[in-house]
Length: 193
Length: 123
Image (tube, rainbow over all chains, first blue to last red; front, side):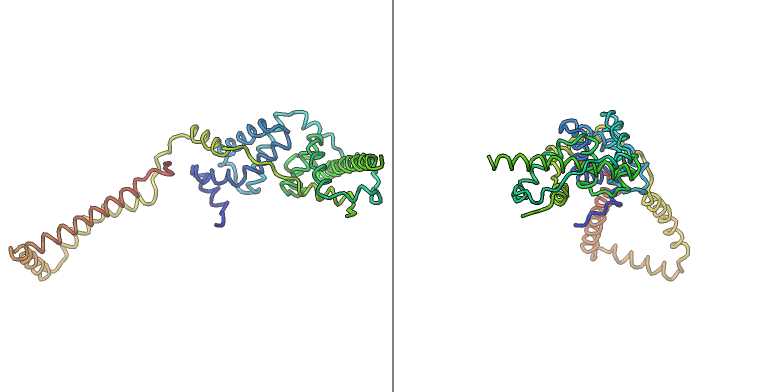
């Protein structure tokens, strides 16, 4: 059955808790994951996500539909997370555009025999590396790839210029490239021992 | 499989899985919301106004119809009433009255339960 989100929002705004429960069901996974990737702790993430939905319920009258309901929810949960972790706001602000110029160039190891490893194994390793990224990069990566937001949406959400968002994502990928390169070297050394 | 690192990273980022929400997550949210929810405010809807208007117009219309009917029709109605009141037709009249009353009661119960249903009632 097709879910009519605007209708659910209208009903919820009129006080229909059943309609709001449906909206929670639709978005809980994304809101929880955004909090989880930002905070890195499942218990804190669950608390923040719950708090975000409760605040959203209280502020539904203010939602006029200019933005997508999803991004409106993200803004609420992100503000809560930024209040919980003030250092994250500082780290995000430190992602200035000029850092792009100083990014390290990581050489491609296309000729390295280790690159023939099963792609899934490397993917799994990279997923662990994504978990280990600093929180500001983890947040940007999550918004871009898990929540599939555009650069503009991310910039509006975190209150940064688009260029800074791109820089942040570029640096996150550079770190992953570095980690991948290191992993491949280790595997190569291990295989030649 | 000689995939370039950038492609691998893009692929890993895109396939980065979403974590499952904790069990009873939405139930807990809704429990808290319902706990803090104020009692529904008394609010008149269009149905209340329509019903009020209908009930007001009903006796007025009945009175006006009776007053404006031609005497021939009134005489005919009185004659039919006398016929219906005759002992020979009593079983038919009683049966019809019982059926009509039952149907009216059922309609009243159904209508009332729908009309005075509290908004967004919870089981």
